[in-house]
Amino acid sequence: MSQSQLYAARTNIYPRSVSGRFRRIKWAVVVLAYGVYFLLPWLRWERASGANQAVLFDLAGRKFYLFDLVVHPQDIFWLAGLLMIAAYLLFFVTGLAGRVFCGYFCFQTLWTDVYILIEHLLQGERPARIRLAAAPWSAGKIARIGLTHVLWLLMAFVTGLTFVLYWGDAPQLLGHFFAGDAPFAAYATTLFLTATTYVMAGIAREQVCTYMCPYARFQAVMFDKDTLIVSYDEGRGEGSKGRSRLGRQLKTRDARAEAGVGDCIDCGYCVQVCPTGIDIRNGLQIQCISCALCIDACDTIMDSLGWERGLVAYSSERRVTTGEQLRLLRPKVIGYAAVLLLAVGLLAWSVAEQAEFDMSVQQVRQPIYVQLSDGRIQNSYEIKVNNKTNRLLTLRFRAQGLPPGAELDFGRFEEVSLQPEQRLRLAASVRLMPDEFDGHSHPFELVAEPQGNVGIAPLAHPSVFFVPQKEPGR
Image (cartoon, rainbow, N blue to C red; front, side):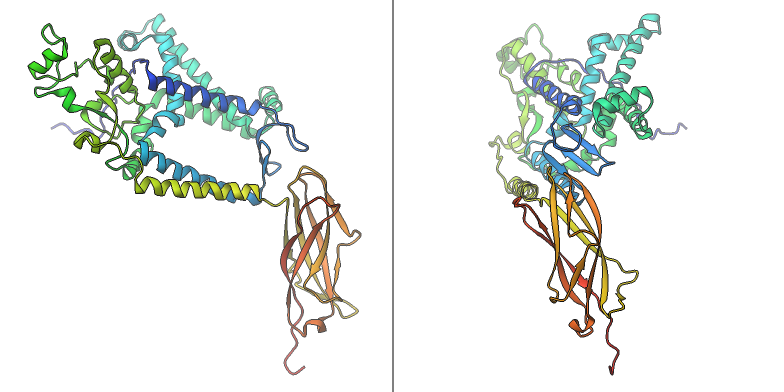
């Protein structure tokens, strides 16, 4: 008795090239995405301080530079807002147009498209690649396949190295990288991304979309009967007697209609161009990434025959089953759009209204207070100020909400100057006679006031002045 297999053997897929409007859109997205990804680290951006790189994630300096925007650690909540926007944008697009993100914008799709292009240029069109795979090993086969993998690895290496260049000054880091002087993290990250890019885009390909990507599993909950999907018009394609190839008596639509067969000539072109190897005529499947290449393939055949396009097209379940028109504006889609616009608006407002500088005040609690020889109580504070501007900032501090006898002491200076994007840690003391509060601690605000009429509003931070409590009976 043979033991049943737990996993189906993988069927190698050799996608055939196709031309058409959706293929052109996909190539345009590839060119745009690759242009942004590979060229952005080299875009210079003049700044008064910091590296002159348009996009730079400076971990050592604890700053992210995004053109004119500088993101500090205190602004990390912007990342939460950005992730929320990305999530609701994905929900909105999926509810409206299905898995177009997978078919046009996913990194796996973009890199796989280029890897397939390399394979096509070196090994030929689909039939040639199939013959090459089935042929016995020879010098020619080793050369073709070997060169393909070399170019795949080169593409993966450039991908990994470019990612690393976002985390340092690109020209300088590149020089250190090839001189062997770059940090270990740069080599480790490049090696990791080289390996994963090569495996995912070159070896695994459709397996990533089918088995590894979680989006393929939960995206169905965002679908409804009006969501756009790539669908096959079964009524037109099958007729009453099913699909049939072109034959001597079945070359015209009239002849095929009289014979009861549909417009589908069963050429298989839609299956051959599919990057995941499915047959769209079998209905919507989890492997479909909505790349619409099957639409281009079918339209090409229909054009060659002089027949109407649309046998395979973007449609919806409701339109396929009932013939009703598409309904794009639906409560769910409107809800996604409303939340998305709200999140974008809040994030934009937060970025536009960010403070020119920030300050934190933390009381030194070891000890929480000391009593001086003259009877006054002293509390100590650690103050951190961060100049977010690209110009010199001078601050003067005062304690607000304490009695007139309170003394705020910063040591030898009365004001502090911060260079552009400079952070400082200051020590301050507040001294006061305990009788002023009758044995009770008192809240107050430490106010930092910019000097020099720079048009920056003062910033106040709440704190507490602690005094010893009076013993009962005294």
